[in-house]
Image 1 (cartoon, helix red, strand yellow):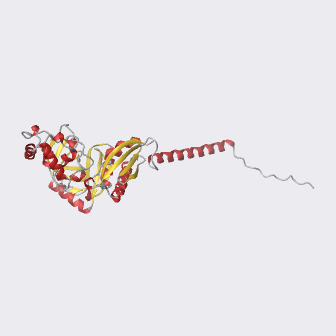
Image 2 (cartoon, helix red, strand yellow):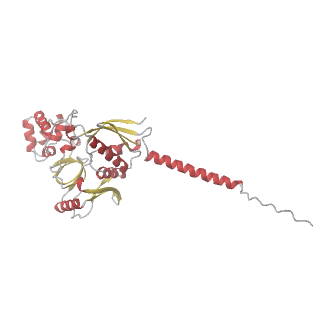
Image 3 (tube, rainbow, N blue to C red):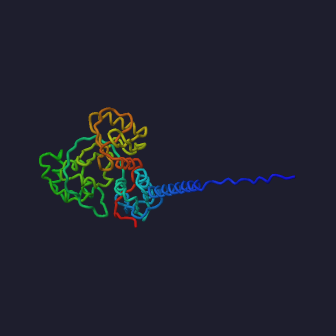
Length: 343
């Protein structure tokens, strides 16, 4: 008797081309993952890399005094939050001394970083008067120690002379008779200009917007009138009717008219903002960040909701403003003392 030969099991073979395809797919996925990881690291993560822009910051407390450790740490946290919200690449803030910080960002975002290093104090004020400002002289730099406002004002009066100072206090507007004849204000330091009364800062043509842009934050009180400028106009402004303390949030967003910053308020802040718009119908309300007017819209009706800062902003500018005012006011005065590149 014979038996059929045993049936041998067949081995299933995958064609060579299939393994090549699988290998290529794996390599592509790995490459994409690595590229994405490198991009994310370069844009957002870790420390600085070669070529990044770097800023050394000196911090000062009230009156130029040394800041306490808590204020330094809070400044560090706020600056990092602002840089992150503004979209700056590789934001990094480190403490390098008792009163110094080092800020690094991607080189392309250096100007963006500078724009968020200001204190970021926001106020809303009714415009009392305005005048087109012509480019003029800047003030002289102050020494490292800044005297109290009364001392700086006394120094300014001594440099100007009693007759010039009294004539300046009598002026009503920059185009008033005799205003252009008042001289000597270009000899003042920035601290001395900052100590002048707001009415003098506004009415004297020799007090330029360049000078006003260098005032110490401590000289810009919410409960006092203020002279401030935008790119070409000098404004005389009433006391603040609402401020950054009334904010619930700020965000940059695009509308049909371009990029703008939308501001939402706390319940009490909303009441103050709405009351302001009710009192200012037909008038301009200046939106002031630190010592600069960023927008001065005319109020057409009572506004029971959000406020909006609009202008000729691009996305980066709107994001920087939103980041600056949305992260809180810096508890220290910040001065850039050095700019360099990471090596």
